[in-house]
Every structure is written in C-alpha cells, then in structure tokens.
Length: 163
Image (cartoon, rainbow, N blue to C red):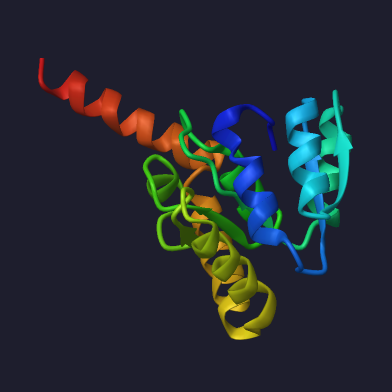
C-alpha cells in the first residue's frame, strides 16, 4: 500500500523474483517502479484511487501484507491487515515494530535476502503463518476504538485526580 520511495517496491520486486505470486500494489506507479517490476518479472496488478470498500476487498483477497517499508509515520496497514486476519511481513524498524509487536514477520527492509526469506517463511510454514494470524488478531484488539477511548479516559482521569 503506497508507492513512494519509502515503500521499498524495487527491493520487494527483487525479493519476489522467481517466487510464484501476484503482487498487488495500491497507488500510482512511476515508470521507474514499473521497470523494476518488469525487470524482475513480477506478476503484479495496480490499483489507484480505491474507495474504502474496494481497499477492504483487496485486503480480503490477499494472502499476506508485505509492508517492507524503510520508514513510516505509523503503519496503519499493519493494523488493518491484522484486523482482517491477514499475516503481516514488515520492517524490523520503528514504528512498525511497535505497531505489530510480536505479530509480524520482521525483515530488514534494506536486505533483499531478508525480505525474500520472510515471504517464503510465511508461504511455506503453516505453523508460523497460524501463529502470525493468532498474534495479529490479538494485536488488532489494541487498536479498537473502545480500547483507545478507554486509554484516553484513564489518562484524563489521572490528570483530573492530580489537581
């Protein structure tokens, strides 16, 4: 999800070379990104300007979220994928590590081999995949609206009781 430089599509394409899969990319592709995908013979599809429902449909069609981003402000796709029961491969860098906690396959986003090993681990190890699904479901609960609201309420209560 996303096509800016931090989304790391050239390294993802290189990591996926020779793996039989389809990469679905949400966001406008530059000619450089198309060249990288084509060079590595990646079977890909691209979607731009999706509605919320169409984006949801793409998550539900997917087998995993690849979010090997080099940097992020938060990493909302991790939470979205967890909430929808999809395993997550993401970067071993903050904030992705904090957002995913122990519920993701962490890879070095600058190491093509690390990304590739992570993808194959999720694809080829059903026990690991099941672990990620269970941990992801639990992790998604941390971001439920009611959970967030309760945490804010507790903060406000603590502040109010200090006066």
